[in-house]
Image 1: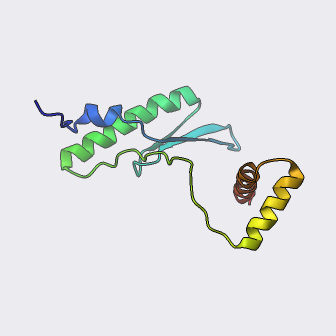
Image 2 (image 1 turned 180 degrees about the vertical axis):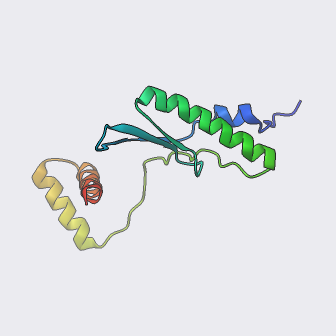
Length: 126
């Protein structure tokens, strides 16, 4: 017997797609905007997160059914990265970061994660 999975509606609906939810502060009243990151155009809005998640499932199903009907490719979820990277940098930058980490009393790894996350937060507020 073959172990090949049939890629039908049930297959795609069972996949763990990335759901992104944002609270939108509208002048009238706040609401939630949600999308499935891997499925372009698969998004909706709702008054509550619970309703949003239910509606996103419906939108996802409609999206997949249409793609299957027309034989269009359907993206599968992105795999999460391992969280490990090998990073080469100039010796002077390494020396500076190691010195700052020592002053803060944390490991170089912890300090670099802090600096990267701080940089991302600054980008989001601009």
